[in-house]
Length: 205
Image 1 (cartoon, rainbow, N blue to C red):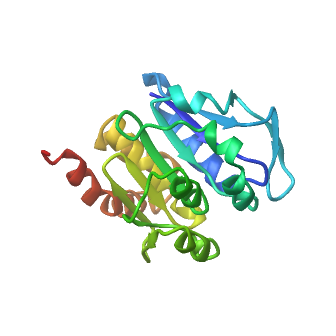
Image 2 (cartoon, rainbow, N blue to C red):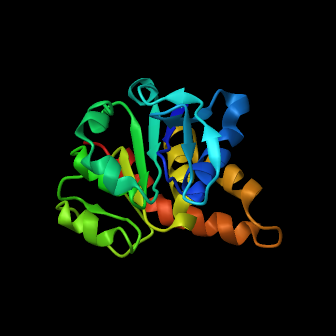
């Protein structure tokens, strides 16, 4: 499973790094989550500059795509040339968005009028884009998922692992990163949040 973690200038470190770290727990099984950006270097909202691992076009060939958020997402959403470089296919790919990344999914026409999650700051912009925003940390419809709140990153990662691998692998990945003394609680909470959407995805058409 090759995963593009879309990371734009002004990105939120929690969104890109938490999800990619959890997903890379499956690297021994051939999974790789790559920081994927339009420029060679991007700087986070807190001034951390990193080098991309893959160019933006990698998102088209990846098996899965996660769109992180950031303080300049609205600028990205207005950049038609940049959005045109994002050719995503929910029929073939698992696609997830975190917080303001949901706005980009909307601009790409991948949400429509389906309920979606985002953070409270971005909520008005996502509603303005025609999306039905719900008060929840995570929701998925088929191969497209959205999450709201920085610390909802692990829900996206767990969902992606459960869908692309197995529920047991998702449990193991969350167990590894969860706080000592609270591991079972974190695992059960995460799995309870994503479980309804795993059943939905597995249901016959």
